[in-house]
Length: 295
Ligand SMILES: [Zn+2]
Image 1 (spheres, rainbow, N blue to C red):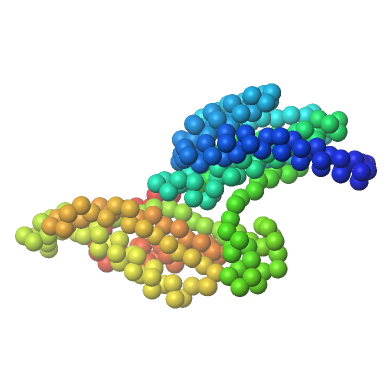
Image 2: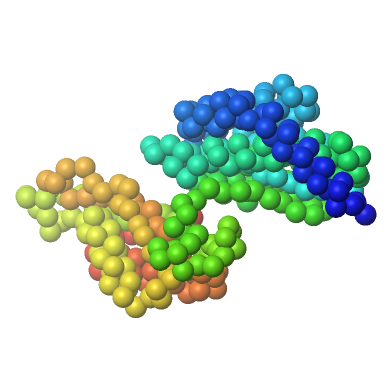
């Protein structure tokens, strides 16, 4: 059993290692990633930048792991327990690094560098793995990693930090008494797209021959708006019309919507999803459009 003095000493080793890497982490990782935002599965700049950064520090890095071109893995240590530090680095379409996955990558790499140094100094058994996890903002990157066996080893802990505004932790009236993730409620969500298919016609000449897919999208959106007053205060439904037609004088034959249905638990999210689907399916029936779900 390590003495508290020894643990204190190792804390110093961690801090020193991170302090030494501080400027490089800031300039070569954090700022570079922020200036080169890449969306789900396209994170080649981030992948190459981070793997090079680790190789320059003497780590052996596996590139393009688990069948994903922009995933990577670096591991040190032997035997003992295995701790995995996940690193995200994807951004949002058009917005860039809105929720700060550049900061996630930076903090995960910093934690890995610091803990790796402490592991080496301590001589203790144990393994530390940094896992690059693409496509968190969309595309379910971690699901693909799980399916490909990235977490099949016996893992003592898999950890990651995510930046967020302080008002989400403490609440607008500072009423929360917990700090960090303990103060944040995670929420289950169903994400999917819908397509409505109707029939085009000239909107002035013969609108009665058209089947209006934009009407279906508007009806679905409006019905969910009405549904909102009968859902729980901690539940959320939001949608956008991604494809809504081209010109007003042609009856819109195709529309596509993108939906998020959220509730604190999967069981409740499933029930809410059924109610939302009833609105969407009702809109299809009312307008005579065909409906297709893209999950
Ligand atoms: Zn995020």
